[in-house]
Image (cartoon, rainbow, N blue to C red; front, top):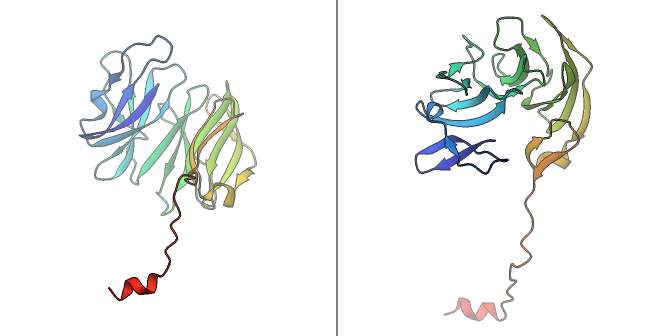
Length: 213
């Protein structure tokens, strides 16, 4: 499991086995060019997509086998890119880009080359691909903090995109930290601040007399 650590030398990515109980591994290749944040594993575990925060925010992919070196993805991209998500079959990647002047969600073949499909139509941030095989849904947050679902079917050289549907959101998600969605799309992990029930309430009497001291 990849996770991002905010240590003394900034953000770095670590891998932690969750089944064998082995020691964690710091991915040195991801920290030599500024701070980074983990995004998504390919389904076969061979690639890790992550966001780099240096002169501009952009996506990289790191091969996790052999002596692979990180590479920019999508290649030759002019705008900022972030928040990658591999498709269930590993053949496509969804990501967020501001190339039109507003953040939107796009999909491109992995590792390329190929076409590009814009998924969101009114602003988009974050992306989660759920489902199995060559079919599923692409979820994202729109600019009104609503969770939107788009049916997507991956094919050999093309992508079939269905009509979008708002699942939930607006005020219900506005003050909530959206963390992750399970691959089957059945569970959503959120973080929400709770009121501190241990906070003491102090009543000050005769406070006007204290002003004269």
